[in-house]
Image (cartoon, rainbow, N blue to C red; front, top):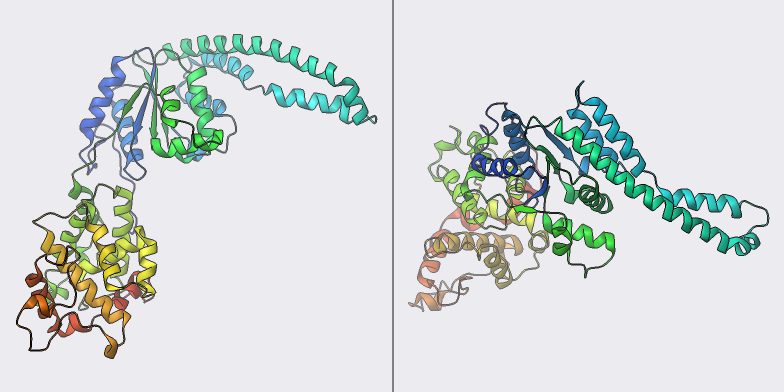
Length: 474
């Protein structure tokens, strides 16, 4: 059994065959866009971290190759060790050369070398060599400062003109190379994970694309989390007041977001891929009538948790990987209480402060209920409210058994015979409100209090397993 969701195989001719998120139709739209404009532009695919952008652009790249496009894939995060992005970008373009186009690429490369000259450091070193190394030291600096500054200014002006001509020559030679390399279609240059690399490197890539690579027949595709890239931009310029959206509009011509897939597609795929059936559907486990519905309960809880649009695909993956690993600490006849089990793992991974309060037993019942309500607030409907109340009751019971010693446990309802009114018997109220469905709440508590396993089960059992404090059993 693998605990990693394996890298999907992308096959030439059918690149989206293994896509479980039904995204091929979006690649078709993007292909139509890049096919329509030969003047060159910058397309940004903007989705949050963890939404599967990298997998999508690699599948799309293969689809473009199948349609005879020339493509380049460049992972900025993996290559930000290189100080000058121009070196890396030209290095990637070199992969498109052949015997016929190599001379034109070499001409563009020669012109690019002029642009990589760092004038300021050279001049600064020259000034140091001329004045500081001299034994006369500081006195010479003062005496010759105005002359040195004048020399620097004159050199700056001359080199400005040289660079301006150099940029023009580079773009002309680059355009000729691309025109001979593109098979009559624009070259698609994909830059992935720009938001994850060093902030100054990310900004430098954007600037160089704009100033050096804005030539016909090349389309740059930036796969980004725009919000995170905006944070990087503000960091580079040292100000939170910079409007990063306005800044990025200087570089991005078209912005596209891949629509979120249907909520159940990804987690059902992962549950199958991680082989949860090996545990939930094992013949040994199915011998116990009270355990046979555990997989269905697990799936229902996935639906409640992951239908929340704030949960990205990679977070779902982390939750389900830990869920599958932790199940290996159970024997096949153990009670799992899958709804509470999955909710607690969700809290552990995404709400660490809440989780730490649970394991330190610092929460009151009402505080615990408030936190649980916040988890489900975006998912509650009239159809699933009672389903969530089941989880609430189990969570309260197991937390009660965890927080207090047996003789100190709080009663959840008054078991004396003096009250006929169920509202009066209840000592707690649902997180949905004091007046909400109290009879249903009372019925659940009353039934489960009569169940020895539920009545004695503690959150501690689950905590030890998801914290991997017990040995693997299966």
